[in-house]
Length: 320
Image (tube, rainbow, N blue to C red; front, side, top):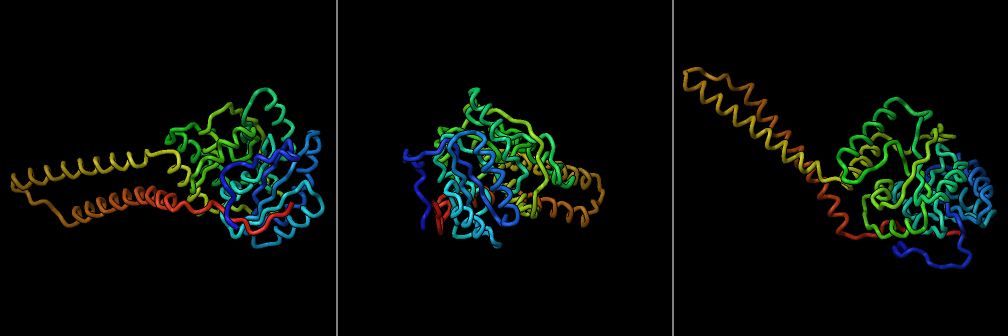
């Protein structure tokens, strides 16, 4: 089944006040606990709600758990994607199906506490359009993950034209009008927290301590983290292309001065010892050229994928 139209669902019948959107990938172990805590948090608000669980091509029993939850409680909506599309596209699928006036984005691993929903709604009532969780601590993560995440956000803010808050994830509550503007964005390579920041509106942080995973392992190994970082940089900055130009100019200037030095040495009768220095220069120039071509290739590859205009996701089955 093809992806639904980017036009948001405008059916007013039984529209809930709150939509909770949850991408799930191999979360069968933690999902029952998450559902229990999330539904308790939603009920505590005293508002109508729906909880949308998107199975992103999991290899475990995640879809069976989602199906059972949807059968037991009609407040749950189950969406099974045709394959693993990745976290950002699974989240996009969930957002396309959200019908609420307030939309909470949260992962199923319980690192972001569902109980913060009430506090987020209180901040929203004070006039915010987006309330995003900003981490003060990250429990249960390695020093490498913490250091690399801190370096990534600060580097991204230096490179990006849009201000993207540091130490934040996709955990946030947004108003319906923000979601409707978000659904108009056509990017294939998605960095959703940056896309929401780009939209503007009044965005307010809510400080919290991120918890350790309740069960399972991280779904972002180093390879995926690097790809995610590249998506973020290429989506919000063209500075790497400009840096490639400056780098080429700097290496060209070095080559020019080296040529002058060689001519002067030859003029005074000194033989320039050449083999080692020549190989070093050739390798240096070759590596710079390949590096610059790699940067251009990253942007060109994303342009190619965008030009194909394929559906962002494909839904295999829906429940409720």
